[in-house]
Image (tube, rainbow, N blue to C red; front, top):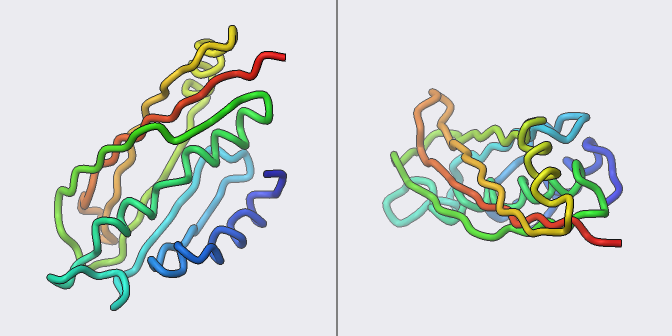
Length: 150
């Protein structure tokens, strides 16, 4: 994927599963190290008891770490979503927000652990909060990364 953060934001916000879930990428940093995403409650993304559908909560953060890491590490690396665990803390009818970040330390650890072509499972923790900053869900993501050997 060879696009600017601005173009990426436009493209992903037109992605049909995101349109269908009511998910919106609000911001992508120019250096690809931060992304902010939101989701307002709509009739089509609420569950049977009238709060955010859990699958939509997960979809709002699902691809972003993998996509950010692909941009940050470049074509010399294989990057895949491996596992995820979501802990639903509080139901909400309010707009939801999440900030997804990749630090310089994360990148250095990935590069160090993959420099000989070994696979590395990198763990990330993401919070989903409502517009009042109350925690709605905690997500643990494990991303598979391996440097391609030339």
